[in-house]
Image (cartoon, rainbow, N blue to C red; front, side, top):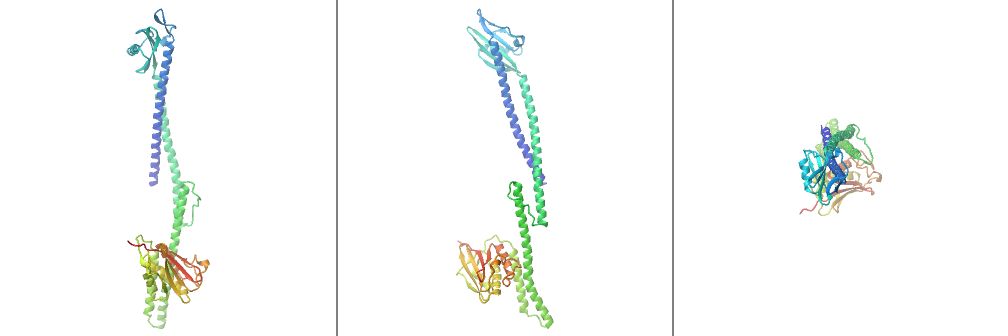
Length: 422
């Protein structure tokens, strides 16, 4: 329905524009033709008057014609000398107007019904001579009417043709758009890796193809992100569940109760993993948040053997629970691989705060620094699944995190610094 409505609007707009253009052209052409026919009629009248005037002369004190005019000319040309008709037959329908023109004493034109009257003064000394001619305007008016009718017919055909062409062009264009949209929708459901790959856009369809390619890319990334989140949840939850199961089986075999400390520890671990993963799946919040990074770091350390070197006051523009969820897996990873020492530092860098989580372990292989945040990737004895979770949380909170291969365990987290309040 929407596509049909759009097609109708385009065709209607095309017909409206074509109608306006045709109307203007018809009016302009009719006006120009009227001026041309009017000029032709006046030229014919002047030519007739000049031809008759050339035969008028004075002899013996009287005004006479040197040549006898034909009967046909007598019906359309008349000569008045000193107020008296000396040649021609004036029809009764125009006699009053003709005599009025003869008495005027000057050259002029007048229209009576379907006729053009032209009066021309003939300069003959001592006499008042006027030549008056008549031109029938009916042929000119008929020509104008025929031309107007033909223009209207051609204009109507032009409008119909413009509407038909617009309908065909829009139909073909929308068919291409519909086909591309249908393909993109089908690929998004079944083959998210497919692309149009039309190259550099050369027209609107190329731009549409590029836009749909970007949309498919986002769909593909969203699906991959969803699968990655599922893998991370599975890995994060499997370990504490395995421990709980092992404790339960051990208690079953030994006949002793499961130690409450072990159960509570693993339940806490499950709760922390679920909370972290859910937070990682959330979108970035719109409202401005801030927290004291030192307090977040103390909450993360919670009795662990970790050294802290922070400025006296450092605030970042992320929520405290996000900062804790970012730093906790990094410290777990450092404690797992450190030989004897893990430390965390923070420094101001422009409008950002850079936190370095370091340990004296083997560190990252330079070939793996770009892949250590991918789920399932291990190296250097294994990095654990906490790093992919860190990357997910960082992406959702607008934080940059990267591994540095400098001969030790080193992960750099760049957080936005909190703006000073007024």
